[in-house]
Length: 265
Ligand SMILES: [Zn+2]
Image: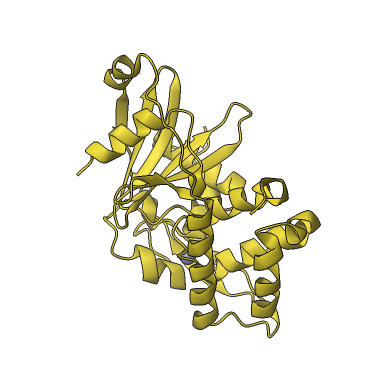
């Protein structure tokens, strides 16, 4: 693999959508839309390999379970290829920064509302997102989110996320304002058009005026969400068993985040 022929935007897009190769029909559509909108991404690696495969999947307008499993396997292989051996030096002043770290747990607000959300695909499926029980009748919710703890942000499939986005309390409402980390999370996910990682536990971490949101539990992968200096919402992944970062991409304060994640139960 020659570095100059790698399309980094494609890798970023895949990292946002999935860390572990677990992929839903909607996410396959998202990937296809990305390639459709980016002719350059189709030409260069990994699009040069993935795009023909996606075209094949969509050739008959039906995305089968076998096709999704095969695509998931390809994405997992791709993630491993991207793994780079990096020298992760512990920065100066690390322990003081770590001691100043504050964490806030946050959970989904309870709202007495159900909203019909239109899904992706030729048949224009509609899903019922329930903001009180945090449930949805889509395949993704039943497959990955149903058994997550009550009020865990990981219960948010794309439809629940959209439903929350449409229900933000306004100043004129008598509703309780939502927890700030939750508002930041849904805004970031909506900006990127992605769902929440199917992680059981979520916290906001703050240190030296910097913050990120972490989600873990349910798989070896932890998700880290953070806005960069330009304000772009980013997702990083850390595998606690294999002790490595997804796609070899390391967040600026990797040492602190890694120490925090490794100390978790
Ligand atoms: Zn759903």
